[in-house]
Image 1 (cartoon, helix red, strand yellow):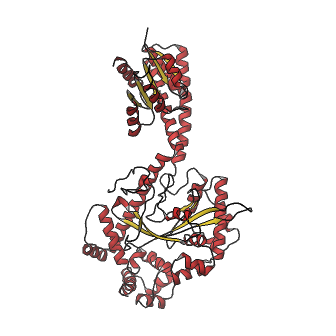
Image 2 (cartoon, helix red, strand yellow):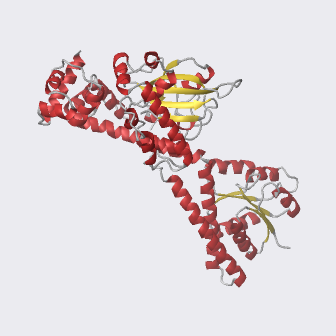
Length: 433
Length: 122
């Protein structure tokens, strides 16, 4: 109750500090002044969409307004300090967050940005190591450069050279320079999306991932069941360059539309508000299978859920990362993910708390995961059904401990856990910054 | 009789350039561009020196180097590996297998000549 009181009061303090009238703030976030008055006097709870709108208008992180936000901010400040090898006590962090909430917020955001950039570096490193196309292209570029360098040196340094040899070397340089230009262009095209780990680069699946990421995996026009909504999204999608990617994205949007029809947004959010985002309960309430419910939960931007789907070979069919739970694009995933255990126990719903190593190996990011392997409908009699496993990744708050959590990673190459029985290859990252 | 070198490399223009500079330096140069059949050429030529690319069509330079070091006649022949892969693990692997030198592309003509002359007198 104490934290609720703080939340309402904090909104009021922030509004007054910004010189905003109660009526103006209420109008900006789409509620009545009287309702805002109740919130500010801690007589109404605030959360979800309204909290985010309020935070946006008041220019603060939603966590700073939310219930228990102070503890979360303080814990996050502690994590930031730990990452940089500093030990700052809770009292000092509390004083800092209380006195300079804006700076505290900025520090947390800066640390998050560093995390993102480091993840990108790891992803690219992973990619440089595992991508055979990239390795082959780089090898070709270097070989061509070697040839040009050697031939040009001969022409420059050899005083007496027979005309036929000179002609031949000129021709070779001409050929090699054309090849080099072509290979360099291919390389640039290949790396063009390097700054954004979610952007597409080569495969149709990656094009689709870039498309979904651009929309934050949420499609309002499909939620409203607008006519030709899917076609509209596909038509305007610069990320979907290949026909294969268009087809995959089309199937995804059709599935999304069906899920939205079966589990309408407002009703679904209402059920979450009542029961929490618990997949089995929502499945029972909406009479849907578990995988569909998990898929639906992952389309709600306010929760930041991640989702992965793989087939029986472990090949990723769908990936939506959660903050702090990276999903490598290349190379094999960590075999300890509950997703893969689900494959060996078809139709059994699994719930498992897991911990991913935080940046620098000094902290843990904790998640609740839900997984199930379901049969994909057979199209003929007498065939074994194909399995697909789905895992929902729900981020837990910073206060959630790792007790009972399975210690997992992303993939061995970028995992700092030492002595892991599942390790397949050495890690390229140290356990500390 | 001059010294002979076999260059096993699959880039034709690199073959021409290296052949040219080594020929001018007094070497008799034989070339081969396929990993699967390189050993047959090496056995026939029994050269004084071998320049061996790592990434070849068919068998890799590492596989061929391993065969060379186990070969009755070629085992003591100096082998200089040529590669665009300069990673430490590749260098270490080459040295473990018995390479005499490890040269990373893009190299210069003078680097190749210096290394070849050094290996020829060692």
